[in-house]
Image (cartoon, rainbow, N blue to C red):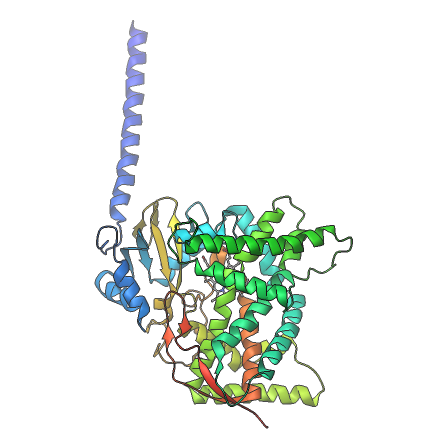
Length: 477
Ligand code: HEM
């Protein structure tokens, strides 16, 4: 009897201690949850949220005014409701960096419905975990390889030359269209080694139809844009499948991969199926196709408005051209990247132009950063544009000033993220810089020009209203 009483006492004491520990733990986690609160801000109207205000600002020449107003009221991180979903907007470089560095257990990419429909489930832009890291690593190191850079330089030189040979001085040249044609040729060559010709034209036509659906209503029945875009993607995938099949059937394979398709085909793991490779070749054109021509066009726009920068850039490039001519050498990729002022012009164009205004993620669980709570299921919008135009980081942020990049401590990966960061850092960044350098070199060393008045449109993507018309005159020097 005594011993059973003793056991009951021991068990009850143990249960009490357990309850105390459990409740203490609970209260601690509750306290930390209440300490870490949703950022300030408003979710706006039912359903619409603050989307109308966001879009009307996005169409103006100061898209960041939407963020600026809220930053003043609520701080650098605030809550809103845009793109049909509750969203935490970050204009804080440190918070955005933390999110970009996080893995897929915390955040996954977030895109509008129409975009995810068009990309498909195995797209590099959507997948997570080891498969994303694998594909990202393979294409990233291929785009960095000197072999690819050599090839891109040769291709780019010939595409630029072909385009410029057609330019005349009695009609305007639309830089936006010209750079789009050149960059598409380079991209398709780097991805699947297709040369300019009938098939390339067909691919280009289908691609135009495909991307028209990226921002369309997410309804995919015959007659809708999304349906037409999906059909166009099917036709493009068919072209790529044919290329993949002929490589699989070929008895000889290139020792050095000639393009991204080769890199993925050579991968020994069974994870990369032909369907996955074909679909991804098309999906990779989405981030690559528009961004590089916009970068080149904006550089011409900013240079046209800043004669001092144009003069210094031209001198630097002419000097290199003369030196190479004297030595009887042709330019190689490292020559283009060795010009410090030209690189500063490209960096400053990326800062001011904000070709990609920011990136979006979806929170997979409640996350706390710097005292802010990002609730599970909410969208997180890292808005780079506000950081790139923040006067705390950049003096006179709205002034095109390539010289600012010549100060040693200027480049910080926190405050300058035109190519994103973390595990999804743009694998095409070297390619983009190289293409811009080659284009600028040939443009400024072959021509003088006068630009017509034109304005930058920022939504839904960055572009020039009139296509950046310029009147060129061949240089005689
Ligand atoms: C000026 C030119 C470019 C800019 C500003 C740019 C910017 C970006 C940014 C900000 C991201 C990150 C997206 C995210 O975190 O969700 C990204 C990703 C990506 N970019 Fe670029 N990009 C450029 C050119 C290119 C080119 C030429 C290619 C070549 C195909 C390319 C391929 C990609 C791919 C495949 C991803 C997705 C990577 C992943 O999710 O693993 N980009 N880019």
